[in-house]
Every structure is written in C-alpha cells, then in structure tokens.
Length: 168
Figure 1 (cartoon, one colour):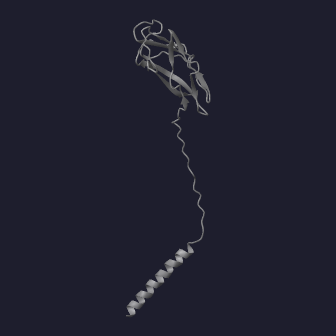
Figure 2: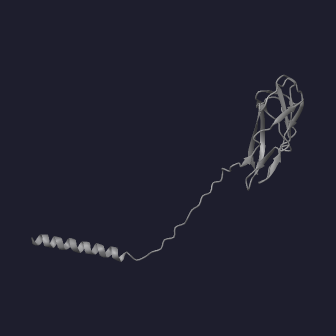
Figure 3: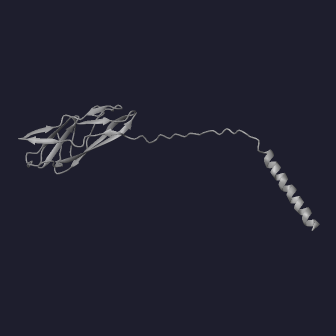
C-alpha cells in the first residue's frame, strides 16, 4: 500500500510540475507574419458591343444599309482592335465585290474592305484601327444583291464574324 501511495505522490508531483511549466510558458510573444501577394494578370476580358445585325434593304432596286453601325470598347482601360472579319454564306452565296456576278449572291464592303467570296476578308489596320477605352469605331458598309432577289423580310442573307482582340 505504501508503494501505491509513493507512486501516487510521484505522479501528483509530475502533474504539478507539468502544470507549472505550462503556466510559466504563458508569457506573451509577438510574431510578424508577412502577407504574400501574387498577381497573375494574363487574362483580360474583352468588353465590347458589336451590332446585333447589319441590315440591308432593297427597295425598288436600290440597296440601303444602316448608317449607325458601330463597334464600342466598353472597358475602362485597354485598347481593342478588330483583327479578323469573315463573311459566310447564309440564304445567299457570298461573292466577290469587285467582280460581282451570280444568282442568289450578296457581296459586302465593310470599312473599305471587300468580300472575295465566303470566308475571311482581307482587312487593314487603317480600316480597323485600335479602339481606345470607352471609344467606338463606326462601321461603314455597302452591299450588292443579285437581281434575282425575291421579296423577303428578315432573311439571313449572310453571316459576318468579327474577331476582336486586346491590343497594347
């Protein structure tokens, strides 16, 4: 029994010493931890407004196009530029603006750049310059329609795809 008491006393002393060590280590200390910041801005969004359509009307043989088509750079910083334009067939076949012929054919001239057929148009930086933040680029376009055009309304004659890129 004495042995149990001695063993119990030793455990009690050890426990008291461990509490004392914890209590003596409770003094305050200060640690400075840096806040590290990594910024990787490889992605910059293009924020642009393009026309919903480029309307063409033929009234008694006269072709009329809109005079208010624009591409607008809506961002607050960063220039954008039209880097490619392609025109593909719709209800009409896209032809060569300079050598206009064919049935059910449409040709376009956008900012002085012309279609040569369905596909990519050859564009220039003069015709499609950089657009500054909050700026816009007017789109002046003309069309020729083959004489066999039937009466129609809102017919998707062709599709125009503008590729717009961020440029510095």
